[in-house]
Image 1 (cartoon, rainbow, N blue to C red):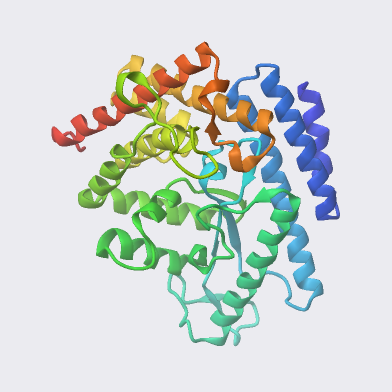
Image 2 (cartoon, rainbow, N blue to C red):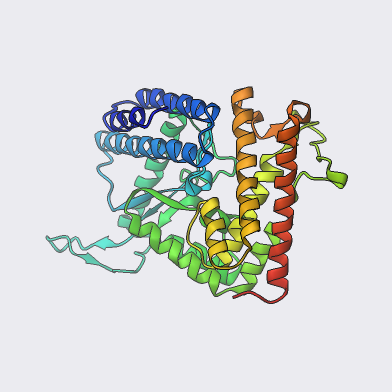
Length: 377
């Protein structure tokens, strides 16, 4: 697809007045991305194209939901907020199927009702959660999140497998709420958040709204992680233990039961193991970038891996992603796209996937050596 064809689509999305219209544009974008893959466009270019269009669609959905809320008597957003992408949306690693992953951060600061100019009070502090003002804000964003997630689903964004979406109260709140959740898990080792939730949060990327609200939370996460070696060690250990599908003598481990029995789960035991290992190591070194390929480049620039390892991990990422794209195009069913039947793989694809899994295991061992030998700086 020529570049000139993409930008009219981008402009038209912002003028669309219905979710049905946005769904049609989303389908057009997926068809274009499918053509790009078949024409051997770089995986990074397809990610960028789909991510750009989906960000624009998300912004338009949020605008339509805001307008619907106002017409329904809820009013305009009572305080600034930011809509944040999680998972592959946060990492800017879009595939043909779009999976929802989102959080909302809103400004909890109170307006003083006795001051006509709307100056704020309580700057930097949570208002009491029992206050009518706080409840009004929380109720608004609860309804807003429910509507937005529903409309994004109608547009073609699949439900999140981890339920990491802002319609789940766990993934929305004021900046003060988020501060408390992060502190409780990383510092106190308690609270509703688990280790995997912090890792999901490490991939967060602001998509629409007040980006400062998101930047503050993410900076806090980075700062707390760098200052808590025990938690970082737990993150690294978890990533290092994620297995690939490579068995003895280079044979692939196949799923043993269920509808995917006899297939290779390339997403879980290939791509996910690679992404998790890269993320954990990058976060432990204070790298703020969320994209996996950029994280690999940053680690290499910092001298934390050799050039050869950077190249092998980059190739591994592209091999896994390429296999997932090809499977999605072949099967046209998102539920099966993560699993490949080995009999359908040609010799070259088999070789690339096998080498990719070897690269992941070598990198996991590299993380262990750097960490276990005391290089934790």
